[in-house]
Image 1 (cartoon, helix red, strand yellow):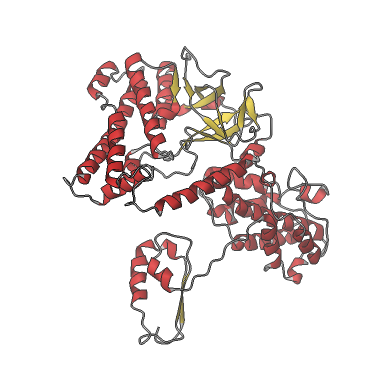
Image 2: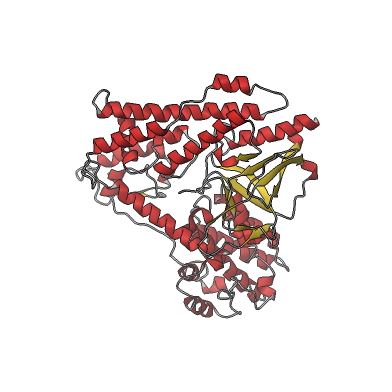
Length: 548
C-alpha cells in the first residue's frame, strides 16, 4: 500500500469467513496512509456475503456472457484463440473436420450458457460456464485432430463434457443433460452430412468450409432471438421462463413495501397480523395422538407402513407445534406481553407479504407455495394421515403428502423383502403407469401411488408413453402408478427414459443429515417411443407438488 503496487484478490466468494476482515481493511484506507498509485482488485461471483461497503466505495465492473445465441457465437469467433488467423488455419489437410467441429463446439458453448435463463428446466443448478472452458476445449480439439488420423470422439467428449465443462457440474442429472447436448455436436455426422442440422427447423447448422471471415458473416446473419426448439425444448418453456421472471419481480416489489402503511380497508398492520395469525391458528387441527397411533398401528414385522405412519405423525406434530407456538407468541408480542424479537419480526414480515416464514420452513417439508396455498396443502396432508389412522392403510397412497418420502419407499421395499425372504439390498423398484386415476383395491405386492405431475412433457394415456406437452399446459397430472419391488438382477438397464422425481419444481436440493437430498426422491422409468436423448434435453422430470 505504501509502495504503490497493485494487489489482486481472486474468488472472494470462496472466502466468506474472511470478508469481515476485508471490510475492516478497506474501512481503514485513508489518503494520507496510501500511495496514490496503490490499487486493490477483487474478483467474485455474485454473493450476498460480499461486503456492501466495499461495493459502495469501489468501482464495479461485470463480465457477463452476451445475450442470445448469435451474440454468444460472435463473441467466441471474435475472441482469442479463434480470432488468431494462424490458429484458425492450424489443422493443415484437415480443415473441414477442424472447422465443422470448431463451429459445433462454439454452438454448444452458447447453448449451455443460454439454457440458464430457463431456470430448473435449463439446469437444476445455474453453472458459471465461461470463456476459459471454451478456450481449453478448443485447444484440445485442435491437438487431437492434428495428432490422430481419425477423430477420437470418445476422448474429446470426455475432456470437454466431463472435465472442462463437466468439472463445474455437481448435479448428476445436469451432467447427463450436458453430455446429451454435446453428443449432438461431437459426432461424425457434423462432418459427413452436409445437411446436418443443429435444430429441427434447420435454421441453425454448421456452414460449409470457408475462410474465417465467412464464418463471422454467417453468424451475423443468424436470427437475433431464438426459439426453444434449438435447445431441444417445447414452446411452453418460454411461458415458464416469463412466469418465473414475473414472480421474481413481484417478490422484489413486495420486499420494498412499507410495513407500517395500512391496507385499502384502513386496517392497521397490527390488526392485519392478528387476523392472519388467528385465522391460521383456528384452521390448524390438534396434534396427532402418538400413543393412540402406536396402539392401533404397533411395530409389526410384516407391516412396515405402521412405522411409516407413526413417524410421519411425529414429524407433522413438530411442524404444527412450531407454527402454533410462533403465531401465539406473535399475538402476545403485538399486545406487548412479550418482546418482539428478530424471529417474530421476520415472521410478521413474511405473513404480511404472503410468504412462508423462514422459521416454519426450517421445520417443514420442502414447499415453494405462497402462504395461503401452503396452509391449505398442510391441512390436506394432515387429513391424509388422519384418514389413514381412522380407516386403515389406503389402497392408493398420496405420495406428495409424505413429509419424508424416502421412508415410505423403504417401507414398501421392506414389506416385499420380508414377505418373500429376500435381502432388501438386492431389491429395487420397478414402475408401471396405470390407465386409471384411482383404485379401490391395493396391489398384491408393492404400492399404488398418486399425486405426481410431469414437467416438460405429458403422459399419453392412449399410447401409454411420454408425449408432447399440450400448448399452454405446463404440468400434466400423472395417473396412478404402481411401484413394484423387483430384484435388481431382473431390471433392464436400457430402454425407458429414467425420469428424476423431485418434491418441488426448484429441483435443486441439499444433502440432509439422513443422507438423502432435501428435494430429489428417486429415478422413475417411463416408457417412450422417442429416443431417450429427446426427453433428456427437455429436462423432463416428475414433481410431487406444484408452486401455486
